[in-house]
Length: 150
Image (cartoon, rainbow, N blue to C red; front, side):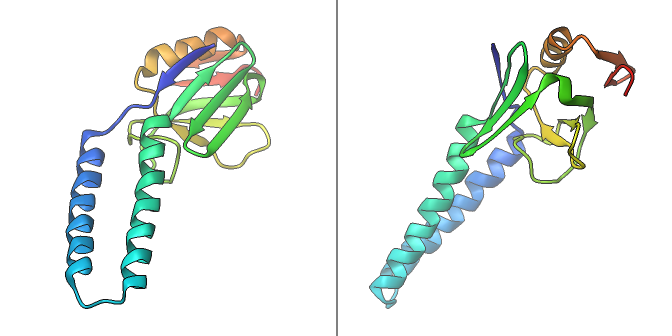
């Protein structure tokens, strides 16, 4: 099995850091304001929970390719795709929510699913070559990979 980390967009990380600095300033101001203590704790707890989830997504988003499956892990979410179920793979810049930390994405179309899974492996070319090598029915067709006969 080979594990590939997600590519990170620097601008996305910068936006997250800036948003957190603003939120921290607001929460510090809230603690010094004449606000009920319960409100202070709830707002702080929600902020910590959201940031915990976002941090978990940032450190745990990986793509694992085995001889039979592609496993996508991102925080509490996991997708397991049989390599034989992959119909096509192609570049995407979709803004849809996905286990991808970059907009430099690839879309994976699967049998039985109407919505492609969007991922962003840091080493895209090596990831695609590994996937095609382990799934002989996938052939390169321009910038796409497609399953022969599909």
